[in-house]
Amino acid sequence: MKILIVEDDPTTAEIMKIVVREHGEFRHAANGQLGYDLYCDAYEQEEPFDLIFMDIMMPVADGQEALAAIRQFEEENGLSQAEGVQVVMLSCIDDPIEVYEALSSGAIDYLTKPIERKKVESVIDRVKASKELSH
Image (cartoon, rainbow, N blue to C red; front, side, top):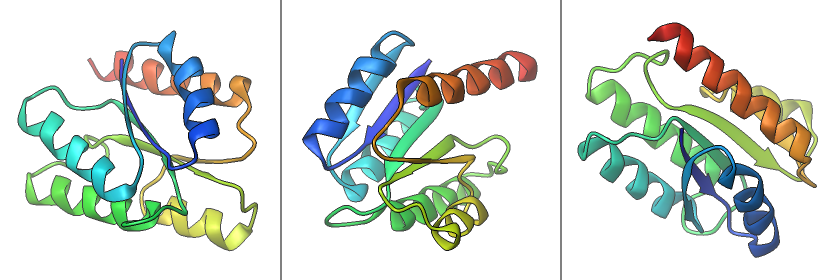
């Protein structure tokens, strides 16, 4: 499994790296623009990410902007949302409106900080299972 972590907080990024390391290859970007660039590069090299964990509040481009750009890129390349990368939004804000916006923008889940290992692993297991079913 290939995972992208888009997170500007060094502590949260390190926690995420520790958890996802056991589940496959991963990359890290410190803002939404870098995350989008890594996503596009991986897609163009035919080594796309299976899953992105993306913080919402970041400098340069926030998570919502990056998610919108990723979905637009996928649409322009003929991918349906079902064929596109699975995105999980991360935030310290536990607000129903934020959750709704993330999910309606194409995220599959929304995890609040502090990050819980069990929840991250549950998402990874779900994405792995859906990948296996689609192949």
